[in-house]
Length: 177
Image 1 (spheres, one colour):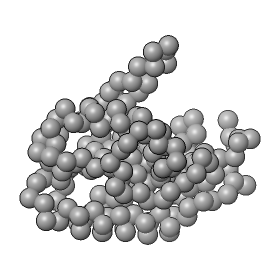
Image 2 (cartoon, helix red, strand yellow):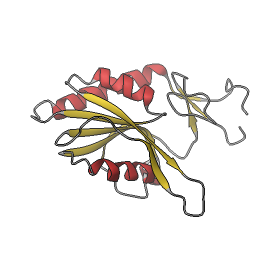
Image 3 (cartoon, helix red, strand yellow):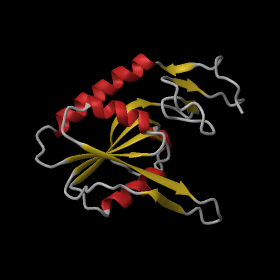
């Protein structure tokens, strides 16, 4: 286990994150302000919690939000299953999926397939961090906070063995950690 990260490089400060979230909120507000449909935001537990809270305060539209959780069963089949489903009705809504990070996109794709069963009018994706080079599947990734490389990150919802999610900034997790 890591004792501390004090020598690890800060990649994104609290100020950079806050500024970018305001910009994303303004863009999303502008894109959906003329829609006559209800607006719903769905976030993946646990990592998206901080981003969801900050982003929904920056979006100046009436909205409802909920959470989903997905787990991967460690077996030969690598089964993915919903462990917490949404409890709001998104039928006919414009839905914005909030992810803290998108790398391969496979888990997010599973989430999209599940949400499409509820017949939303539209579904788009916002990710605080994304590595487009790592995407293995096409996603409607309309909004990206910051593009990243293959570096492992912690903070602002991103964890290392369930630790460091509560950092207000993003630090690089060195390979030796």
